[in-house]
Length: 62
Image 1 (cartoon, rainbow, N blue to C red):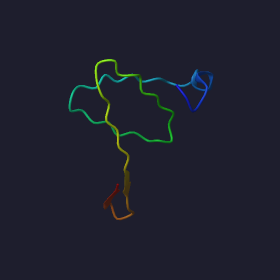
Image 2: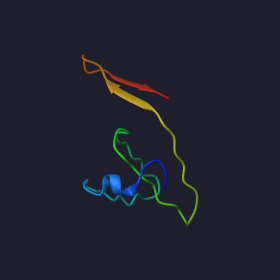
Image 3: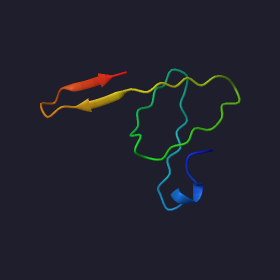
């Protein structure tokens, strides 16, 4: 793990997700996160920006 010391999130609520093949996960990058190593294969990741305008229009940039 890198980026922050684990003690900095000891007081926070933790969520553990078990994704299956084909699942995708969207989360707020302002929250701390960590991804465990995948001993059984590859992990694919990409980043994008999603936002709602004041008129309710969804904007996506990648």
